[in-house]
Image (cartoon, rainbow, N blue to C red):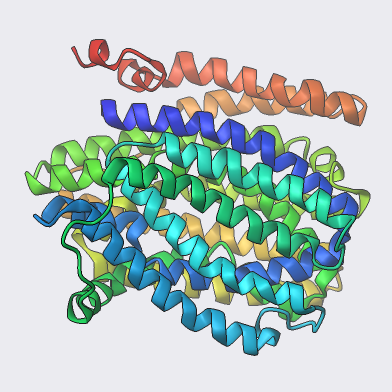
Length: 485
């Protein structure tokens, strides 16, 4: 628990840094590039990041298990994964390069835009490198790469490229950010693990690695797909401008989602070590504890961003205010997904195939609900913003269902209950909503400057005194040795 708290605390600091860096990018992208350019960029990202995720072989979680079980030199195992990722990445990169219509179905692209395909190997390698560092409890490298270097690079370069190559500024800024983040990770990796020793690429060994990773890769792709399927479907039922508005709402709503990554890198190694000793009770306690931390933090941030939602969306431009309804549903989706996130962190090790089927069921439910709700909106004669809200509502329902099912399933496997809910969440939410409602009566600038902190302070004070016990407060202690005593 001390390791979880320390890693989570470090990465939560990274979340604050990432938030500070992400806001300028959203402002620049919305104000300078506009809704249509964002829509084209967003659809390309769906294709690129899904391909990169598959090519990373699920090593964000799977590498911890291989490093725990294998007697081989650790750097050899890491370089095995890196080599396979590079080889696999070349396949979709070449396909998309020669068939760019798969990334840009609107036909709005040029030769510079096509270069984004080379983000696939960079993204995949970064996932593996940071997973290797997390196994050694080095979360600081993840913070530097993902919370400082990547977001600040894309923010700065998006602004610079707008005045040099405005037609391709977003895609080029993204490509540069991926490789600067990778450089930070590789530097730390070489210092921690060193170069391989006696390492020779072996096709048979690499093929076994790919085969073993298939269930985890598919589960990762499905879980990631639940956060992108809505954009893909919207691309078929709405124009680029509507997709751009929805993507902006999704970027704001995904800020609380980053909190789960505060614990994900260190949760894997802790779980695998307890699985080795069959300490299922400890795993259940860790899942419930971390699940509550994530749920409490996500709920607070969702309230702070959701209650003054119109003002938040208006920051990126007046054309984006229509996405306020989508933002509200997306923020709620992140909150209800917290239980599924921590449950899956264990299920991928103890029931890979069954977890895979649960994940496939989740994304299938989301797809059906998304199409059905969008068609209902069309039938009722509502406009484009309501289509975006319908897609977000479908995501919320699907993720809520997945949380209930996966928590129940994991509790049966471990023989211990899995429950992240505490009534203190209700006690903290009520007053925070009242404070937020009063803040909406202020001018928009005051609503943002004073309203958001007031909501967070109200919620935080109550959840700290009513919801957090001594075991929870270890998250905020620096002296882990004393907390262990």
